[in-house]
Image (cartoon, rainbow, N blue to C red; front, side):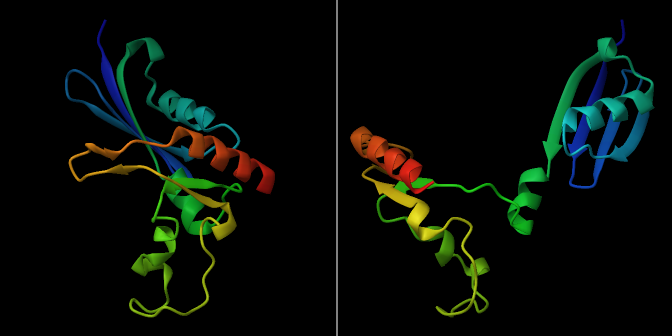
Amino acid sequence: MQQTSIGVDVGGTFTDLIQLDEQGRVSIAKVPTTLDNQAHGVLAAIGQTGVSLAEVGVIVHGTTTTTNAVLERKLARTGLITTRGFRDVLELGRRTRPSAYGLTGGFEPLIPRELRCEVSERMDADGAVVQALAENEVITAVQTLLQRG
């Protein structure tokens, strides 16, 4: 049986698919993204190509769903546990300020400061442990975040 390869990108509006068979023939499909269950849109796109799932040897999947959720601020209430000293790093990046070097301005952080906790831990640039993770602090941070909702 011939094997075909599929690449699929699930976006906020459309799901795009490209299919390549062993002879180098290409098919494309574009269907509306099914937000309630993205698999339905992927299966609909595969159906448009006429390929049977039994013929599919490889599926490469990508999505902009998370990027869109961040950009549109359509996020669930989220907490962050980070290395001590990095609690405010999300707000310090240039992209969150109206002026690249300005320290004032109106913007809403992705994660409210009260939902960001720090724990003792440190790694160097090569990934070697400089200070081991204080697991007891992680437990405390999780409990704190749960209490804060």
